[in-house]
Amino acid sequence: MAKYYSRLTRTEEKKNRRSVIVFGALTVLLIIFIFTYGFSLTAKVSNLLASATGRSPIFEVTDDTPPAPPQIDSLPEQTNDPRLIVKGSAEPESKVIITLNGTEKEILTDIDGDFSSSFTLTRDKNSLSAVTVDEGGNTSKPTQTYNISYDITKPEINITNPKNGQSFFGKDKQITIEGETELETSVTINERVIVVGGGGKFSHPYTLSDGENTLNFLVVDLAGNESEVAISVSYSP
Image (cartoon, rainbow, N blue to C red; front, side, top):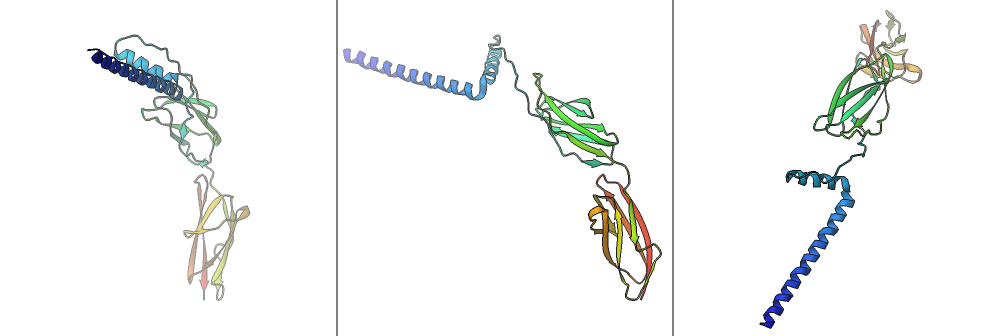
């Protein structure tokens, strides 16, 4: 009988030691969890469990962590359209405040964090930035400032050679087309792209066909404004 009680005692001691080890391990894991993920998350989980069991919240949770700034999709640096669509993403179900030329506009993100809104640009220069405001009222750092130029002025183009109505003969079948336009524009002649150099000047060789030749020039600036010019020259072998 004494041996039986001795074995029983040892068994109970082993169980107690295992319980102490398990409890200690869980305590260490809980401490690591708190330091890793923060007290706020732990408090939220505890409150959720309390709510599920019908008890009052254990912790009063305060959120003072600012959200990340909104991510804004690519915006044009220059445009000839007064309507600007701003799209992007931020913290789900938060508020995005977009400031255009000093005027603020509030937009709510959806459950995926996406947002979209339209704005009306003013002539010439416009500046835009944005912040995120979360449910706790915390405000993010502002985004970069986006500078957008609204330009509806058509670019100018001047053809200096050849002259409209000019005639060419014999060995002058190949001519050099020369002219000038505004900086940062693209020019095509009869849908062929030509290089615009420094100062907006361009020079391009062109082989004439027998008879009447129509040269159609199209110049487009960075905002998308276009100008067209056409001249006619003739060639006889």
